[in-house]
Length: 113
Length: 114
Image 1 (cartoon, chains in turn yellow, orange):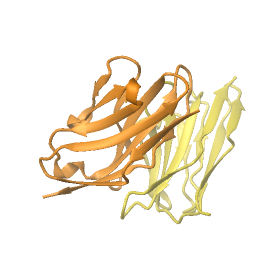
Image 2 (image 1 turned 90 degrees about the vertical axis):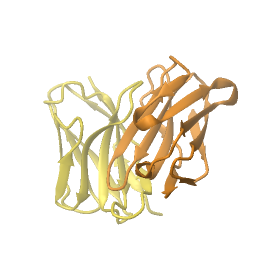
Image 3 (image 1 turned 120 degrees about the vertical axis):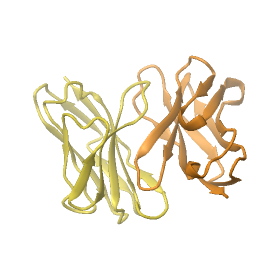
Image 4 (image 1 turned 180 degrees about the vertical axis):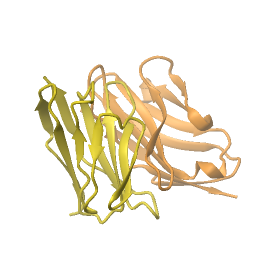
């Protein structure tokens, strides 16, 4: 079955450390997105990619980095420059150019200790 | 655990007509409720949210939603549809006070007829 896989589901990080969240899809989707969710807030877009080897900053890209070397993979690195990294991170994908069916990963909880 | 159900995967309206998108939620605690929109080739965008303040919530682009606890509903409306409202709309719920995770509905695709 096709879908999006995010890992790890739970992650603890010490202050000052970088951490990378994985997002893999086998749906052959062109577009992939990373969002951040804080309690009582809406999702906020961190980065998105419409095509391999290309990505754009979203609304809150500072302190994050991404890569899109393969169509099926869009990892997100939370760097030590991100001041408040504790949050829920959601990866999604969509076909991109036609239709709007969007698929969601299960999300990753990152806690800084 | 919480969940949402969006009634109707596709809605077609005429330009100028009322837009009504239905969302019912299930939550064991008082919920936070959200409506998101995704326009073609764009990311998800927050339309509005309910966080236990006023039950009638106004959002962007003329949309509003009313929280009805007795009906466990959070339906989204817009009095007069515009061609630019054609998009996919998602209802989502999270538990309060400190739950991070959103549970999304399956989405409703809106088409607007000229």
